[in-house]
Amino acid sequence: MRLCSLLASATFVVIFLSLWRGRREQLHNVHWAASLLLYCVALAGLEWINRPEDVLIRSLLVAALTASNIPLSTGVRLFAGRPLWRWWMSVPPAVTLIGFLLPSIVGVLGMPMPPQSEQLLAAFGLALGMGTFGADVIRQAARAVPDGYGGRIAGIALLAYIPCYLFAIAGDILHLATPSTLAVVALLSDQLLLMLLNVGLLAMPAEAALAAMRESAWRDGLTGVYNRAWLAQVHSGFLQPGTWLAHIDIDHFKSVNDRFGHAVGDATLVALARTLVTATLNSEFEFAAKVVRMGGDEFLIIMPNASLLKAQRLVQNARKAVSDLGPFDWTVSIGLTEVLADDTALSNAVDRADQQLYAAKLAGRDRVAA
Image 1 (cartoon, one colour):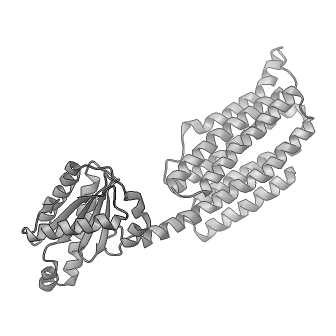
Image 2 (cartoon, helix red, strand yellow):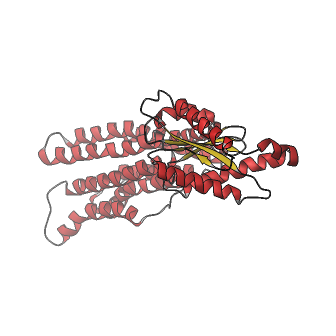
Image 3 (cartoon, helix red, strand yellow):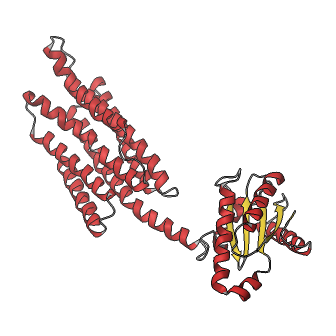
C-alpha cells in the first residue's frame, strides 16, 4: 500500500510538472509537484530505513512528511496572490521532529518513555501539520476562487487525515487493534485522501478559468462595468426593501456623437462608467454598490442596504464629478427610487427609476429626481 501511495504521488508529480511545462507562468504547479516529491522521498526513506540506531534520520524523514505540506500551501497561496511564507509554517515540522526525537533524548537521560512513544508523538505532529495547512488551504482557496470547490476539497482532504492519526494514537494506547491493522487503516485512508487532495488542486485552475469566462460574459465590453446579463442572473438578490436604484442618463448624448464623433462618444461612456464606479468605491457602500450599463448611455447603480440620504449623497457626488470631467461641458440626469416590499421583480423598481429619470429631464436636466 505504501508503494501504491508512492506511485500515485509520482503520477501526480508528472501531471503537475507537465502542466507547468505547458504554461511556465503557472508556478503553483511546481510547488504542488515539489510537495508530492518530498512526500515520496519521505515515504521511501521510512520504508528502507528501519534500524533503531537511525533514529535521527527517521525523525528527519517523518518531519519531511509534515513539511511536504508547506509547498502545497505555498502553491495555493501563489495561486491566490498571497504572501508565500509565514513563520507558523515551520512549527508543525519542528513539533514532529522534536516529538519523534523526544523519547530517545529522554532515554539517554535515564528516563525511558512508554513503548511506541515515537510513533504517538510523530502522529501528533503530523495531525498538527494537517490541521494547520488544511485550514490555510481552505482559506486561501476561498480567496482565489470564491465560488470554487476544488481548493476546499483539497483542504478538507488534509483535515480528514486528522481522524486517521487520532485513531492510530487511540488504537495504540487503548490496544483497539494490532499495529499492523492500524498501519493498514492509515495507508487505506491515504489512498483515498491523496486522490481527493490532488484532484481538488487540479480543479482550482479550471474553476478559476471558468469564473473568469463567466465574469467576462457579465461585463460590458466597452466600459467594463456589469451588463444586463449579469443583472438578469442576480436580480433576485436585490429584490428587498432598502435597496435603492439610480437610473442615470447622459444629457443630450446624441449631440455629443454628432458634434465630436462616435469615438468621443465611446470615450464619454467610459469616463462616465469610471466616475460611477469611483463614486461607489468612495461611498459608504464600498464594494456593495454595483454599476450596470443598461444599454446606450443609460447606467444603473444598485445600492443594497441603503437609505434615501446615503443614496442621494452617492449620486449627487457622482453627478458633480461628471460635471468636472471635460473636455467639453456635459451633464447627467438621475432618477432615484427604492425597491418596495410588493415588487415582484427588480424590473418594477427599474421602471420607477426610469420614470424619475424622465422627471429629472423634464425639470431641466443635470439633476436628481427621487
